[in-house]
Length: 202
Image (cartoon, rainbow, N blue to C red; front, side, top):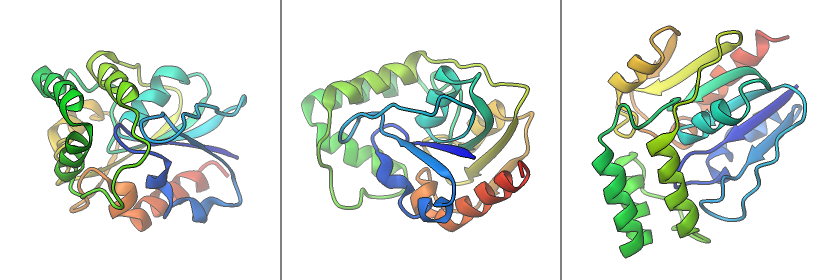
């Protein structure tokens, strides 16, 4: 079975480090969208279960809807701009131009977790491009696959109402605490739900 993990804006593949060891028996692909470190957008040619955190979920839905055999949203969405005021994204663009590291630190703070280990290999142009995706993408949600929604009640980046509005036709698994960075703050909880989802495919 193929699993594809995609991180969100302002982060990188490291968000999955406490989750991936539980899935070593599967063919796992970890995408790097290129905000930190070297971009790697390769995914399997055949069908896969997509596991997307935040913007990573929208990326999967936009680019590979026909290749998804299943989809797990972790604090994710298909469209951001319809639910969050545009001026927030505009301000973030300006702040990146002024002080990229300070903007990333502010984003992670609002996400509920100060960034572990600082920021290395930041790509300012890619960060700005990612903000453009957030301001434009409105991906269709496939209706012919199984979908699991994982969310936190205290997420300030993708608030509870936004999650409910987007995923109202699906069962949402809620955790009380964890903020936006659930793969880091709630790895065991996320892993359990991913495992349960995969078990339904067997």
